[in-house]
Image (tube, rainbow, N blue to C red; front, side, top):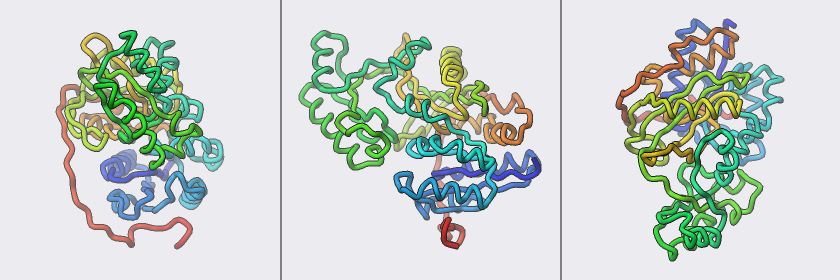
Length: 352
């Protein structure tokens, strides 16, 4: 394959990831474009792509039509979604995109549905021997568990299909629990989470035990046939806006084992990310995101090159082992840069 075009959707602030794919194409000696797409015309990443498009929000009825139009116009070979909320729609249209010759690096719909329901993690992950926190679907059940001393405060109230820390609240007494639960329902109603599930907001909240201790971000990457290729882990040292701000890369056997068990058991396509907490005795999976995690940039800086692997898989070429490894014990931190917004660089899909 001498030419290869890549579409990255919901690129937002992730100029770094756009650059990683551009560099990987260059290093592979492949002529091609990295196309950045985002709902906001002034998203910084739309100043970085070889082609840049404003697209509808994933809640818009024209969202998939627009994605398909971009794929047709630019003969897109590879699609990588970057946002939790859009993945369900893209997964539901994988066959349509694949008929256009697009390799879609997103899990199938059945996997997306499972991992986005945090309330059923115990049922989902117990068979793999992976621990998850105790969860309750309403205030009454949580109160009964507290009375039985099955759990203790603090507890966390959050959406079952949450993203970006929306509607999340930590509580340490009974009085606050009802208020936090109702607040989470209100937050869901006012956010895209409401349209991301068929459940009513009142059925989309869980109360969960808090696992206190070290926090890790763990990635798992499979090929287009769902075969596990590699995993990466980072110990979180600081967060900002629901994303890792500072971390240190780690190669901990227990985390590698959890990631491999999940990757092999799910048999998903592409990248998934999990939040894993360690209480000093056991590791617990708290959250699984069915898309390219925001923390990958740290792992890339520590020597891995998953964009190169994605390009090789799309082109039917060999994946190099060194692309699948990160150096451990590298401490890293994000910083902000400022870009000028040149509206002429950004196009509307159906208006040119």
